[in-house]
Image 1 (tube, rainbow over the protein chains, first blue to last red):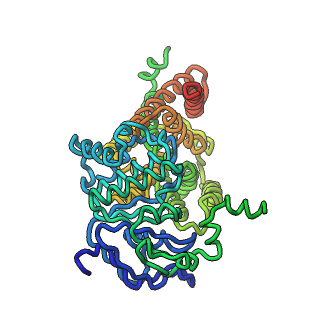
Image 2 (cartoon, helix red, strand yellow):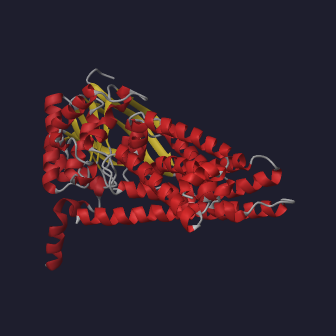
Length: 247
Length: 271
């Protein structure tokens, strides 16, 4: 594995019974790249992420990671009235470093403030998690992921639950993390437009890896292979469909 | 004579009073995790499972509390196991195991020769059954539970908030999960004489459900839950004394009144 490669996957296969979830997946991600992983529902994107973060058992192949990993999971519906503050939620990311049976001190809380500042959410420090908007919640979870001081950050559909404005500013934040901190990013997303705007490289997955190219090299045919037959609908959007029906 | 004067005269009243306060602290602590994790069904199921255990204890002539504790822990762990495997739903497993443990309890009791304990006492609680040894056992459990919640406060919060990510960040979620299950089961068995099998669920749900309406942090929720639970026990015991009604039932009604008042207050505050 060459020095600038941070993640290398070789011949990854994963089956559940007779179902092939992932087949012969091989790729490398270099330090400082912002890679978008796209594919339809059931393509195996989240399974691949699980394999990378070490939460998948029973796969064949090799996953080599050179450096600390950070992980931002899919935003699930969280309980709005859960009694936890933003600072406590972010401090969760410091747990591994701190270890069990040790309490957080003022240095740790300063670190939490610093992390929230990085994601532009320092004013949320004392707020309850339940009062946050989708975009604010995702920034807080990003701060938590950054608490492990990752060299590569894996994001699983981070745009879910965020409005359009929030999405744009979240992707801007990710791009600035890449530029300023040299962070490597691998992002699973359904938002094709924003992935093309934000990422350097694109991986097209549907059980097997159909493409792994620079963003400007990805052709409509590459996307059609993984999204067909709904690709046109995906690209042109619902408005176009409505217009076609009206005609 | 007043309640407190009588407490110094009648040993059973003193035992019942202290036991009810200790039960309040013990169940309130675990009720926070029960409510945040939405595992009320495990508490209810373990309570019913303890009935089968109590009856088996009477039948084979060994400590019924010990057998009840073992069966309640076994039940909670079995349900938890099935809920993780997802081949049979939690609700189905509870629907299968809960009546089974009650049925086994009744069968075991029918085989007991000679004196058969009063089933109603175990179903709805009976302060006359509370001994000094029970108070000591409760005190030991309260000390262990307080230590557990103090030492593993962060782990409990993370496990309750997001178990998957807690594990990702290095929390030993298995240890917390099974400690909580065992804690809930032992709390139930230790509370049966005061609260009864049917009513003990209220002790494991209502204080935390009420506290959650007010608390902004987990610490706050634990503090409110303990305060509310002790308050309800105190009022329930005094009401039971003056109105000559069963204390377990009086405490459950007091817990509900607290819930109603705080629910109305917090609702109007939010609106």
